[in-house]
Length: 410
Ligand code: ADP
Ligand code: ASP
Ligand code: MG
Image (cartoon, rainbow, N blue to C red; front, side, top):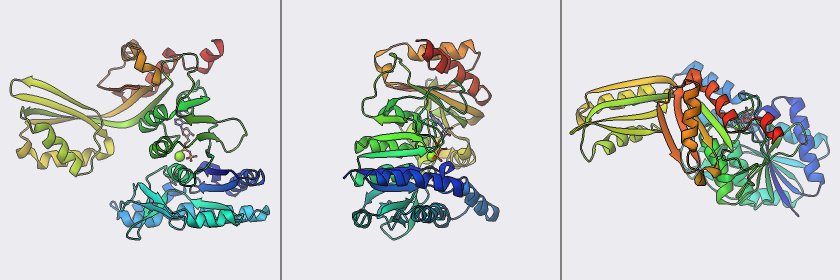
């Protein structure tokens, strides 16, 4: 008997009618003879509403208590889903993350799943029930409730699929697949039939919110066949797999972007062996995520170091550097905010030189200033002014032949 794991995201269970529609899909999977485990997200924007409640009380809510609070959102959906299924004559049971045996690191708000004890789920599946699991949560070794980071229900689903050795993992959402770019921004974005794990991982890490990056990481590491599809229509979705077929020999498979980027430049640091490690160890100790780094010699004994961070971390980053001013020995700090990162991704880049050059030509034709750059084998990212982000994305989408109109002509 096959085992399938499904996941329904927030919009797809946003109200009672949608919960009933999702239940009808679950019923169909069950009646086709599979063992079914379904992961659900919190209803609609209810996680945001819970975050807001906490912020109405304090500027710095305790992380443990945030996990206690946010984990309730998914529990609401899971019990309602079971009620909807029972009304349709389907036997089902809901589990919180910890009841489902999901164990995580002892980190609040962004925990990684360490292992899953599937015994209780297996028991219920063997008794013929559909198992509904509250997404985005688990329990640490010391018995504390943890959450997996925003968007983490995707990771719950893929990790369960890996642990249960499921035949497939379907992510039901409010788009009918993975597109060449966020279809809400690039109107001419095109749905992809398939995409490789590596490309999807880059896109997810670079801002494409359609899948949680750790979910893709899990799927790649455990070879889980992952399908992103619509919770409303029955259209084929997008398959995320090891080797995606190359459509029309395109070098770039997709584009991602994210705003709220800030560039910080530490000026006139001493040119010593330990300067870089001192700067970045200080930031890491404070838990500040640094993205692109540029080092530039400005004299025989002096250098500037620039790096980009999420704008949310700006105040803390400036504070850390200020506190270490004497040890680091710099002269001055500048920062530039309201920036954005625009990235192109595609496995075809490995064997095609000149992709970065083409990207810069497209941006310069649009008179968009490039502030920082980073590359890997399969991506190029450029930091640009935030107000130019959408214009840049649209121009790149067309230049790299990703538009749906262009595809129709080929
Ligand atoms: P869910 O609540 O189901 O988890 P999300 O909002 O997390 O849904 O993810 C779906 C959204 O991801 C879409 O509505 C879309 O705007 C956005 N998105 C961003 N990049 C892409 C992309 N490349 N392809 C499809 N959707 C994308
Ligand atoms: N409810 C959580 C969030 O909004 C987790 C998820 O939906 O995946 O981030
Ligand atoms: Mg999501």
